[in-house]
Image 1 (cartoon, helix red, strand yellow):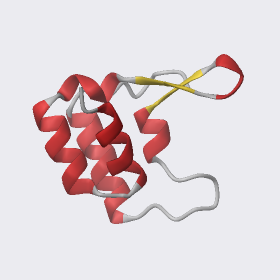
Image 2 (cartoon, one colour; image 1 turned 45 degrees about the vertical axis):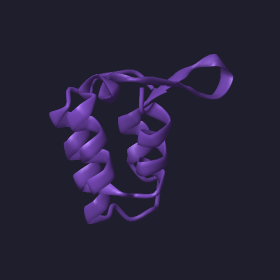
Image 3 (tube, helix red, strand yellow; image 1 turned 90 degrees about the vertical axis):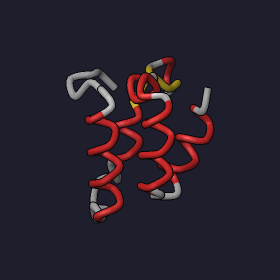
Image 4 (cartoon, one colour; image 1 turned 135 degrees about the vertical axis):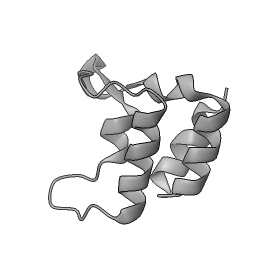
Length: 77
């Protein structure tokens, strides 16, 4: 499983690497991550910049790749 590599690519805003990993393992797009206070978060939540931060073309490409691979836009996180 390439979840660690996918997380690193998302954090580095490396859209090409995210797309390559998801092309091999699209199921990773639905991964849940441990978050604060015992809650979970999704890769979509991680890929979207925080409040007040600019959404870059790389961020948009990463979100697009996650959605194309089956990420749940309605997932709680």
